[in-house]
Length: 517
Image (cartoon, rainbow, N blue to C red; front, side):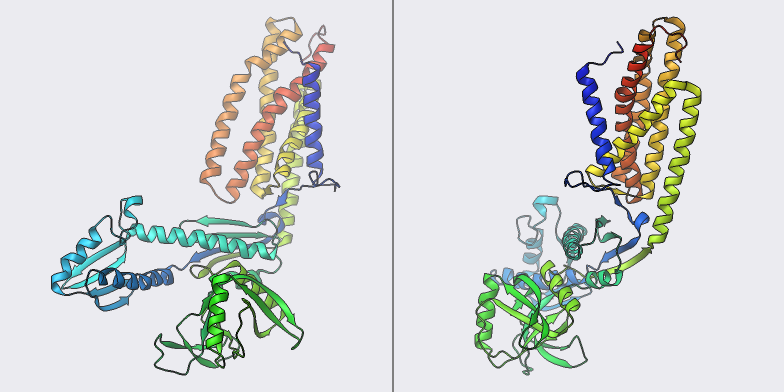
């Protein structure tokens, strides 16, 4: 029957008041932290920057093949097979062996248990492809190997990009994968896009190496330029330390020289290596190299065994802060290239909000007028329910501090239309019941029960579409599907609990009255 117990009435009232209070936190500030949540505005509403980054995996492939060279040498050395004429050309590794060992080498690559094929047990596929022609072996990453390498690079790059952006304190950044070699970065409200571009464009590959004047250095050497000028130094290829050994880096003001420096702290392994290198290299210049350029090259005056040091290089406090941030977040596995960039101004976002609110208000007023004209007092109940439904929807978005976009506003407007549709179905069904049933309570109760199937079918169908859009879509489509999906649940609750409760209270007091609807 059309009856609500006192417990259910109290429950529905408390739930409604709770969400009204939560939704109101977007307009008013509360002392309680739980009620001090707000909906975040998306890039299209408050302005900001949109960057699409592409990972350049060529250096990673080259580095992997260079590392593979040493692995292969040691692997076949144990089998008394010498690799000759080793060279790396266009992401392919070439070498030759003596004729009697050709088949042995090929068998090793085809052996599923070989260390050369670590992917076989996981993917039933080889990490490397090998071709032999005229005693020249050509090795390159297989298709599965490239996919795995790109996936690994993307995962690492995504985490490091997230660390760098979080360090700056950007509000609610949206960082997502795109394909297997791209990363989408949305930064709502960003007021300094050039700084972000500079930070994301640096690999931050840090190494400590000795400056050498010996052309016959056993590790080899290369000429590198200083970051601040065109002066060059002959730097050994032997890496004393890398950024992997850093625990922390912070900008500081050197009280003695009154210049800004970056202090760093090393892990246990790094401290041990650094102490040994500085003890044997007193009087030598130690080059601090970042992304192939020398930041500074101080002369080692004494052994540094504390596991900490500082980097100087004529920094401003801002540049020192950015360098420390890069070092703390770690080096990117591969360079990132910005292939698409868009900036949305706050004025455009403000216009979008105003247009969305105007559309919502106009639509809401038209719905209220139509429903009230057609169903009188029950139209008023429907209108009250619609307002409460909006509080439910906005309240849920506020609790999760969701990001609202312009398509999200469209989802809210559509929710209003669907809520009206459900009420229209119910009231038209009640009219049909009143033709055959004189008892108002029974007729209204039957109207709610018999219209339930049609309402559930329509809403479940729409919910399935919203779920598909959420998981298959991206960006604005996700925002639309999220608000639409939440709106379906709030609509069903408001129709079958709030509206039905208000209807039950009115009908119970006017059960003998004719022509209620």
